[in-house]
Image (cartoon, rainbow, N blue to C red; front, side, top):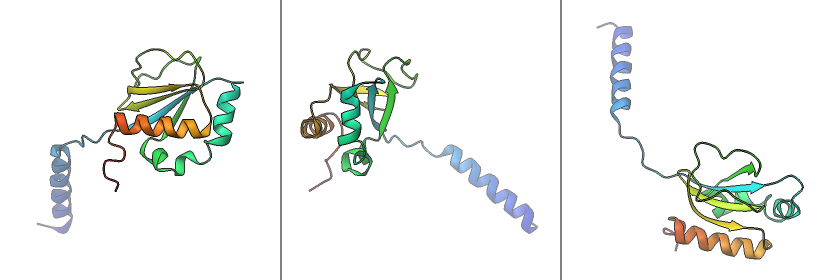
Length: 129
């Protein structure tokens, strides 16, 4: 068998192996922030929490996704009910709502409420000491 034929045969075999490999069942957790233009509490969250959020353990575990309250809910998201207040923070796992925080009660309350929701509804913190 020539080197080029061997390479094609190897790549073909690898392709079939990849197709037959099981798909990962790992879940995708996100924090959906529903906001509105001109929302003072949304702006406060962005000023107080927003810059640090992606670098926190919580932000790494549940990356932020944002939508405007007047926009259609993306097709990959299933909510218990349509948000009414801004901001509304909705914890999602594989697009399914697990819980929500309506309003922004301030930085300290947000972190406490959010961590409690993460621990109650996801595997967050299960492997920490």
